[in-house]
Figure 1 (tube, rainbow, N blue to C red):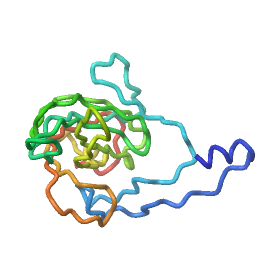
Figure 2: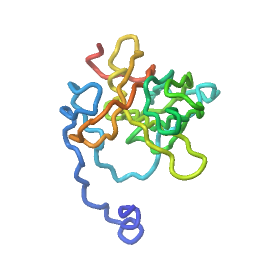
Figure 3: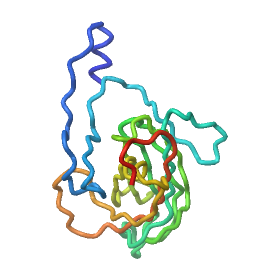
Length: 204
């Protein structure tokens, strides 16, 4: 964290950062390419303002901060990373760039069509730019867990809906690096998103 070290020795704020991707409106990995987003906007703050919790939490949400609830329902035709054509899949979720706190589902053993039905709630202080990143891994007791795929869903896609919710299948990609070719199918995730809190103009 070079900016954190900079602040310790120099009270003057560091120079502005240059966005890695100033315009992601045409990036192929986004499920809603028509939206004009700057997902990786520059920031000098190292504070993780978003908090991910299980939906069962009794903490009352702030009315001034958006909240998105993500339910990972199930997967289909995931990559078989283990012997005998199976995997032990689980998902990790994070709301970027407002938070870097990672949460994860349970591991479902010996299947390429897992069912999780697990919900997580994230604070989204900046729903116009926040997005939910979901990675799927194959759990291995020994060694590195195999990466099976990833999907990114902009919070604004659900925030702008009049009903504040939608559910659909998302195709997993090998990476979120723009322009990286997809050489084979990585399977799909069935995800439901619900948004509550402040909304921008132009709701669908």
